[in-house]
Amino acid sequence: MRAPFRLMGGVLIATLLTQITACGSILYPDRRGQIEGKIDPAIAALDAVGLLFYIIPGLIAFAVDFATGAIYFEPGKTAQVAPEKLQQAIDADGKVDNIKLQAILESELGRHLPLDDPRLIQHKGSAQQLAMLGLQPAA
Image (cartoon, rainbow, N blue to C red; front, side):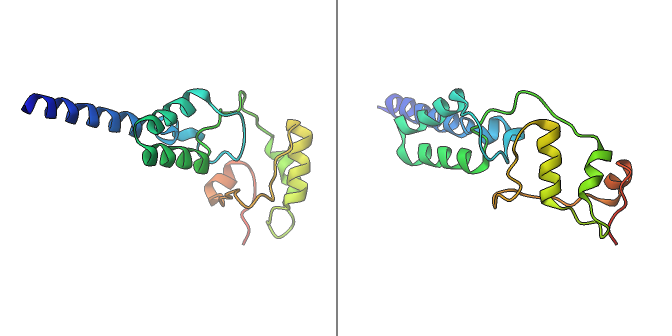
């Protein structure tokens, strides 16, 4: 009588553990923060496993992956723009002009990046990071 309960408990723990690891934000933390892209079918399939066993964890896995952007493939190549070209987007006050920055990125990378998207998270650079790029921090 105890063996079937242990077996069912083991299967339950195994499925819950696979569902926790099926979340794309855990498997690919570097993908977080993407706004759009092609959906990774492997992550979508792993999230769908949660729907087969338990509806709520599967929906939570899909919601977390879509909200964080971890379900999307990473762009195939990395792109960099020279800091000298980016300096054109900084005005005299040290503030970044998003319209100029968007135009520079579009001409250099050939991609339209929605810098006015409300989901975009902008981080301020530290004084050391700006000095490494040869930029003056705003006072």
